[in-house]
Amino acid sequence: MEEHDGLTTMEGRRAVILARARAALDARRASPAPAGADVLPDAAAHFDCLLQAVAGNAPSLFTDHLAWTKVVLARRGTPASALELSLECLGEALAAELPREVATRPLEILTLGRARLPQLADDIARGIAEQESLAPLARAYLEDLLAGERHRAARRVLDAAESGTPVKDLYLHVFERCLHEIGALWQSNQISVAQEHYCTAATQMVMSQLYPRIFTGRRSGLRFVATCVGGDLHEIGVRMVADLLEMDGWDTYYLGASTPTESVVRTVAERQPHVLGISATMTAHLGKVRELIAAVRAADVPLRPVVLVGGHPFQIAPDLWRSVGADGTAASAASAAAVARELLAPEAA
Ligand code: B12
Image (cartoon, rainbow, N blue to C red; front, side):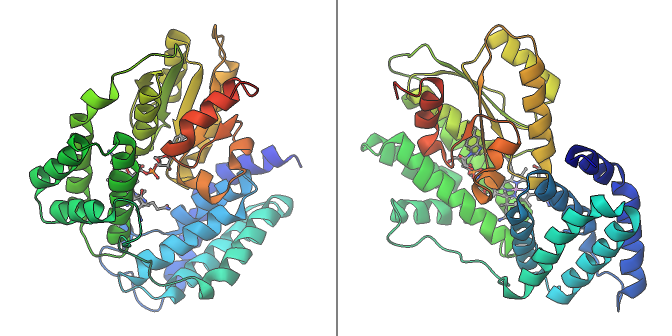
C-alpha cells in the first residue's frame, strides 16, 4: 500500500481508534480520571503527534511529545504509569482498527517512544542563566511581568533600546528567552494560564512600542508574507521573523495567528511575495502546513514564492521541512533573513 494511502487511512480512522483506546483505558484504570484531567494531554494528543511523526518519518516528534507530556502530567500529580497505560491502550486500538500494513509504522514509533519513557525526565530545567546574553535584563523583565508590573517591564526594555541595545537582541535575548521561560513555568505548573496570557499580551505591547525603530532604513525591494497555519495560535515567533526581515530592508506583510489556507493563497496571489514564511508551533498542526504548501504550489500565481517554514517541530526534526514540501527552514528569527536571501539567490548570498 502507498504510504500516502496509509496516512489517509490512519487519519480517517481517528475517531474509532480514539473511542476504542478511551474505552480500554476506562475499563483498566484503577481509579476514575481526576477532576480537570480532561484538559491534560490524552489519547487524542498522542494520536495526532504520532500521525505527524509517521507522515514526516520523524519518530523524534513523538518522543518530544512524550517528553513534554511526562512533565505536564508529573507536575500535576499524575504518575508516569498513567501515561504508559494510555499509550498501551492506544497501541492496542491502532492494531485492532488499522490494516496490518498501515499499523506497522505507527506501532514502531509508539513502541520506540514507550521504550524511552522511563529515561525521560519528570521536570524541565528552568531559569535564565547568568552567562546568557542580556541575562540581567531578561530576568528583571520576567520578574516584573510575573509581578504584574508591565509598565516597569516595558520601561526597562525601552530604556535599553534608548541606550543602544539593538532591537534584534531585545527580541531574541529578552522576549523570546522570557516567553520560553514562561512556557516552562506553565508546563511545570508554577504559573497559571492567566499569568502566561498576561506576560504574552504585555510582550506584544512592548514589541509594538519598538516599531519606530523597526520600520526605518533602506528598502531592498524584497517582499515577505508571514503567517501561522490554520489552528495555530502562536503568532509571536513568526512576527519576530517578519520584524527582523523588515529591519533587513524587506517589505513584510504579517498575517498573525491561525490563518485559513485559502486566505493565505489569496494573499500570496495579491501581494506576490518573494518568500512566504509559515509557522507551526504545535506538532499536531503539521498537516495544515503540508496542506498550505500544496495549495500555494498549485495556485496560479504570477510569482512563485520560496517557502520557508519554522517553529518548534522543525527544530526537533531538522529535515522535516523537506517532507512538508518547503524550500527551507531557519531555527530562529536570527538566521531567517540570511536563509531567505540564500534561497532566493544561492550564489549571491
Ligand atoms: C504564548 C504562548 C501561547 C499563547 C499564544 C498567544 C499568541 N498571541 O501568540 C496561547 C495562550 C494562545 C497558547 C496556547 C497554547 N499553547 Co502555548 N505557548 C506560549 C508560549 C509561552 C510562548 C510562545 C512564544 O511566543 N514564544 C516565543 C517565540 C519568539 O519563540 P518561537 O515560537 O519558538 O519562535 C522562534 C522559532 O521557533 C522560529 N520560528 C517560529 N516560527 C517561524 C516561522 C518561520 C518561517 C521561521 C523561519 C522561523 C520561525 O523563530 C522564532 C523567533 O526566533 C510557549 C512557550 C515556548 N516555548 O515558546 C507555549 C507553548 C508553545 N504552548 C504550548 C501549549 C501546550 C499550548 C496549548 C496546547 C495549551 C492548551 N492546553 O490550550 C495551546 C495551543 C493553542 C493552539 N491551538 O495553537 C506548549 C507546546 C508544547 C509542545 N511542545 O507541544 C509550549 C511550548 C509551552 C510549554 N512549555 O508547555 N500558547
